[in-house]
Image (cartoon, rainbow, N blue to C red; front, top):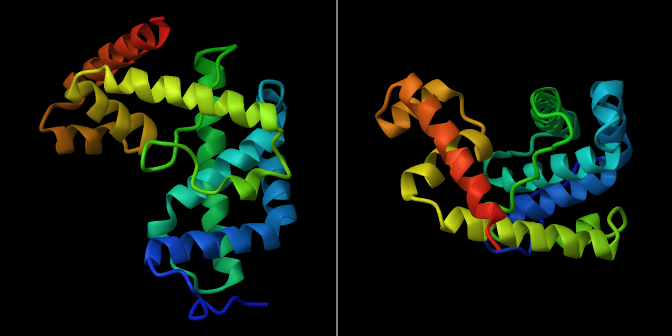
Length: 196
């Protein structure tokens, strides 16, 4: 049954899209989970759970609400499948390059938390939510301690997921210079994160 997008009481269009995405996720949770389970593979599922991948996919979808335009449920499934594939590919890349370490999902686009905790309440335990909030707060504090150009490259490449060539053009640098800058930025972030 299609959703009537004109029937919304949310004033901001981003808020309306977020509410719409939440309703669609609730409606299609089983399908989204099946897609994630099919695409994850045993290598990734040894290191992370399908629930984590589902949560990361939904959070990424909510963060990308401004890019979503509802046409029908079939297109929503295609859109969220693309997001799920990107989340899975990123996690798999991390598993392969840094065994024993998984990238923590970024906070909401405002930089402070995920927009709607109720969406995840049935999936996550209260202690895991508190632990994630603490980790996100520490990560946000570590990011604030970095120079602006480090924050910018981490945001563009690691968080926004832009290809290095796009990052280079946005930062007016060569691709090689950006790759070197990213290594230095990630090392600095690790050092900041480790500070007491």
